[in-house]
Amino acid sequence: MKMYIRSSACISPQYSLETKKFFNLRISPEADFIKCREPDYDLFVDPKMIRRMSRIVRMGVAAAITCLREGGVEMPSALITATAYGCLEDSASFLRRMIEFEEKMLSPTSFIQSTHNTVGAQIALMLKCHHYNNTIVHRFFSFENALIESDILLSEGNTDILLGAADEFTEDRHRILSRFGLYKKQGQKTGNFAGEGAAFFLLASSPGSSPALSISRPEMIFLPENMEETGAILNKLLRENGLTKNDIGLVLDSTTGNRTNDLPARTVLDQELKGIPSFPFKSLCGDYPTAVSFGVWMAALILKEQRAPEWMKDISFPLQHILVYHHTGASHHSFILVSAA
Image (cartoon, rainbow, N blue to C red):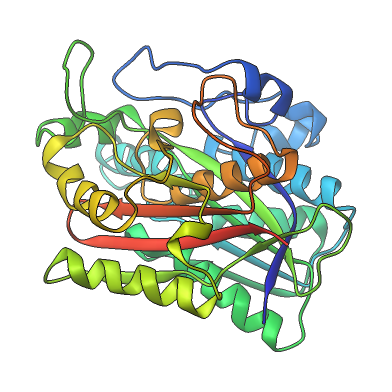
């Protein structure tokens, strides 16, 4: 069964909620990690509720509401969220208070809001949605597994599934991980910037209004013995969708500029996808486990508008198929196909 994207919305370090600006303006990072451009949340949430929401919850709620509005749906039949880190800010706040107050007289608020399913729960509370609600936490494959679950639910007769992903990055986490040399610092020529974001999609089993977009079930491989194994799952994805490599008009890859971590992906791009235009989507949103959701959002937007941002070069239109290639070093590799239906 095909999955169709009825609508999508994204909050990222770019002008992703203002798509006209997204096509014209590209924002470059000015710090060691890229923070999201956050909207005026009063347009989405009662101001009294905003004060009780952490930043990642606000981002997720705003992206979800925007997605539902654009899709013309008030109540989804299922809600699935993906995250790897969960609510880092609240987790750090709770741990700090445990130390400061010596584990006495602790407010439960930060603990309650530090769980991974907080974003999905808050969206359901706002919508008064009592339908299926699940949060997938699977590190760098979180979004891919949430997409697989969406496919299963659609095959069981559900429709109007709200699928989203959200991860935030805090200064505490950046400070810790930077010690291991995982992230690029200003002035360095190689490496990658840390990032964050929230993206939501309204999925259905029928195309709906034009222009219709379809999204494939992802193909994933963990710790491949060699890049030939990674190439094999790419060919499997194309074969199951009745396509060849020549049908792909654009590859959105997740290379970051970190020469060591990018080497396996570069091998796949050179051996399996040589000659096909590609663009590194993490240069826009930064590096975080569910960044593939930004890549899928970007693919859907380009296919829907049938034009590329001014700062992307050598893309030919009309464009029918975009391949989103997500990888993390040599360990996690996944492929998702987004097509103009």
